[in-house]
Length: 81
Image (cartoon, rainbow, N blue to C red):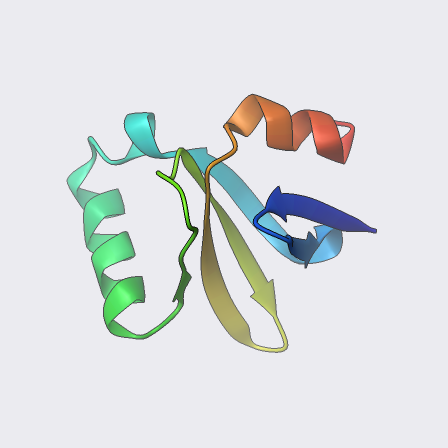
């Protein structure tokens, strides 16, 4: 199955490591450092709108951070969890 994360993007649900709220997680220095490092390595997939959350995926040995304008509750509801 796939999870639609907005902007005509979808990720395979089996590759999702976590779904995180940007407002809550970016208060932590470790999360900010992680996101800065991912950006520097080209692992961040941006969204067109103001991002509210990010989806961390790992597939084929590559980790990606997908920014999305959808909130965590909406994404979890779409996953059915």
